[in-house]
Amino acid sequence: MWRWSTGVRTMLGYAMCFLALGSALTVRLHSTRTNLPQYLTREIGDDEFEELLRSSASAGHKWHVEQFVDGSRCYVPETEQNMAPVPDDLLERGIKLVEEATVGKKLEYLPISYWGYKFINSELNKTVIQHKDQHQVLLGSMVKADPQTVQHSLERDEDSYYISERFGDGDLCSLLEEDRTVEVQYRCKYDTPLEIILDLKEYETCRYTMLVSIPSLCELPEFGPYTRQTPANTIYCTAPATPEFNIATLVEAYKPTFLGHGFYHLAPHANLTHKETTAMLMYHQQPIPGNEEDDGTMDSAFIKHSTMAYMQLLEMGLLNGPDGLPFSEEGNFTVYAKVIGFDGGLITVTRFQISHGEVIIDHVVPEVLEDMEQGNSEDYEQQAPEQLDEEEAELTSQSDDPAIMRVHLQEFITPEYDAIE
Image (tube, rainbow, N blue to C red; front, side, top):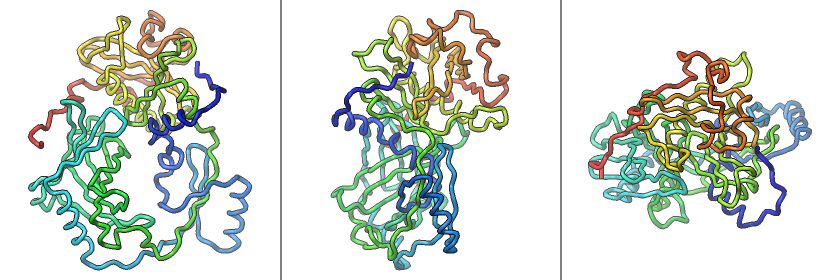
């Protein structure tokens, strides 16, 4: 069972968790509020929030309230930010600086995760690649001589301008049946003396954003910070209705591995037995629907994300059989795993099967939890009831429902792109 620890938290523990869960720690403000303008954000209490609404209405201010799935609300002022005027040729001059700084270079980004990333700017094209050992996935490319593939624009955020380039023609995404795409943002960063990749995020399924620091852009003041002429507006938000995940507990009990698509694999540390804690999955995006009135859209997205997370577990060798050896794509097996939310509460139990080259993901009714309670994700096949038929498993819906995802393994096999090197 999930248990909350009351032990003393150390600074070292917090530092470890911030490194391991850098993206997860911002889930409340970024993953659930991505549609908000990039203004200053301040958290206030419910009473203060209601008073803010009353005073704003009396003063005739323009504003609206955003409601989020975590129960929080945000007061968003409807005022435009005034930015300093820019020269007509700013984009052209900025692109020239970017090209001079990166042409003929290959930038590497190796975050604390399974995948690494490359940005390659050759004489003919630009490419962004996701890689691990010999496996490579093309996230997007741009042919410089083809006007149809060159998409760049001058964009701005709360403080400054930056250059955005959009790369298409990435590898086929099986979940969307579309090519992957990536937006590359070139920014001025005074504290980075060299051209480096600052970050890469998958903000939607098979849609990516890469941040690249170009120090020479700082030569143009418009790309530097503090070009805003008026102070930023403040967005006031209430706290979520559900408690935040206790990061100190995660440090003490689990080793997190980020799988992408909103999932972490939580494995107990070696000094803990399965009776104290068990391996499970954590999903830190919106929960799946829990009532009959929902249209199933969110549930379908959850199943798709689960499939990608399990395939990542399989590729990383984190799904093992009773003999301790990792399962392979060529085998036939079934594993079960509990899925918790970011607050530690149980979302569902998933069943992951590979049978004759076909992947099947579905939900399992909570009644089977007692039979699996002392096992971890690789032991659930032994711990679960021997006969788990359709009545006991009670799948999400019939097999033709998109919430039950069946895909063949070859859809996950991506050709290598050694020629790009």
